[in-house]
Length: 188
Ligand code: AMP
Image (cartoon, rainbow, N blue to C red; front, side, top):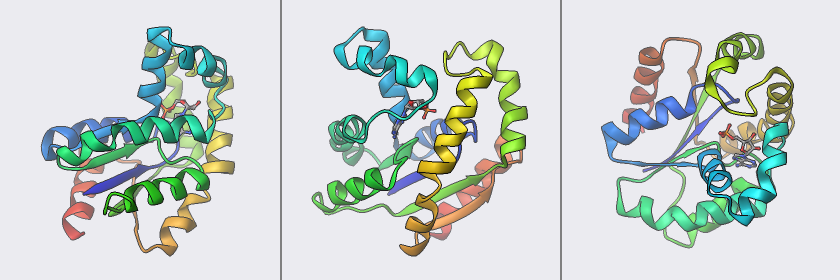
């Protein structure tokens, strides 16, 4: 099973991915986590992406596609991949389709967590102080939301046309959203 958890920043993708890792033995492939690890390690890649991430802009497609490609073998050995924060552009989605096809696999399901901008901004306001993430501040969050709306939202028709998109109300509690995801997975 290869699943994409799709939605705007702060929609709850990471929280739900972590739960699915435990309940379904799948591997969470979060490009945001991989990039933050690169920055923490002080690698050349980390130095290259640090400023871009801090501002809330997207890093280049080449960088994130390569990070994902490196991790596909690991997810195949487990119960599949949960793509979290990837793909974020149509070019990334196309590259992912090609990479999976080359391995005799495909995206099985895209679960879109629907949360409106106003609720996201309210929700994130509480996180700014405690998260410690340099891109969790009102200015960078606005840029992240704009990047989602301009560059990532076009993936909604991409996956709808492919017959793979299921929408879940992401405004409920963590448990309610989890139940919605479980229903979508068992219907697949
Ligand atoms: P996230 O943890 O998914 O919210 O990602 C944090 C930041 O990492 C984003 O705001 C981008 O700067 C960068 N990033 C993560 N994933 C991607 C991606 N698939 N494409 C481009 N930039 C990404």
